[in-house]
Length: 500
Image 1 (cartoon, rainbow, N blue to C red):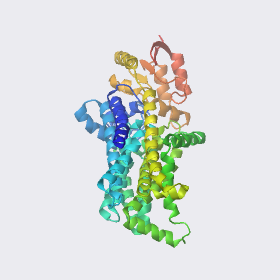
Image 2 (spheres, helix red, strand yellow; image 1 turned 90 degrees about the vertical axis):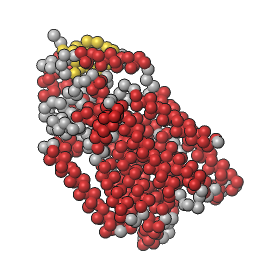
Image 3 (cartoon, one colour; image 1 turned 180 degrees about the vertical axis):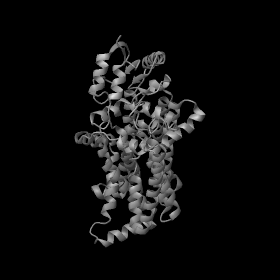
Image 4 (cartoon, one colour; image 1 turned 45 degrees about the vertical axis):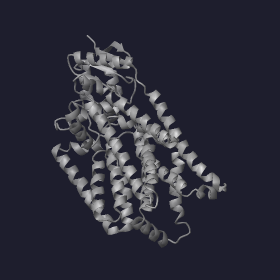
């Protein structure tokens, strides 16, 4: 009963937060506004994936799969922002279901269904407590890409050496790539496992995946006059900071708490199996594990996935990055931690032997570790709730700003693009990306500056900081300061209008 109460708390807290976030009119993340605009215009090739020499100066950062899913959901919901958030929540639940099914199926059948179900639920619930899982209710592409990736991982692992499941996994990995182009760790882990089993099969799968990726990319590029690849890879390059990358690793590890050491113990036990063996012996043993033992296959593939996603955390050094850059790594760590908890439950003598403790204390250690992980992560989640709490005053202020935007007699520019879409206005330019492109010399901002100098933008709504180089380049900032005056402040929003 205690376990069920804790599990209920672990599930209920984040689900309640997700439901509240889905229906909120406020923008929870800067990227939500631009993704909202992109989803609305994904089928308009006069706007989507075009070169930004002329307005609108909007880069489509990601491939189209998530946007198309949102448009499909919007047919039934009728509100694109809510549709986008619901799509993210649905993808999150689908990802957790894929993880739960994987854990349930790979735990040996000698264990009871109840035991397997309990640890499947633990594996599915642990990621819900990550602070970074607040992205689960954002209108962002991340959760959709993770759904495809973890569904593919599960199918590949459970399919063993059969070709059919491997082909399905390849299709899902391609879908993950065309949802978010950096989601490749799962595909590389499975490809490495396939190569250990059969190099010929791995090469065939790699060529099949490459043909799909290149073919779809070429088709997209042809439809957009070369703008598809330019948007995904040419414009979408931010400056990199090594110190920021280091801070990302520290933040990622600290927010995992006890999950990280549990996951590392699982990986260490996999490596320890090959200690003292000659070069060929580990490869033979590894091939046997991948071919015949589903639990070991899962641990080997997930350990490789863990290493690849750990390496990808360095991408946090990109200016403008956030916790979503290490979410894949943290989810993988949670799955491995669940397997470690199962190991402690299945072999209670293990910690006693390792730590020289009386055998009778081993089950208590396993239970305490499980409860500590759950309690710690719930505490982190509750803290994030208070940190992101919204108030009626903020909602009222946003509604007033939407009214001002709607009443403006011309184009409106804002770094809160959700307000623009809610007011029925188009996005003139996405501030962050055009600022980066202008500062790095990869885009000529003279067209945007000219619009500002000539007063052709009727209203500028600043939600961030007009002095921030992350959103406003020096040339744009000078144009605002010299040709616009602060007309009003509504809560945390500053409204600028052209000078007479």
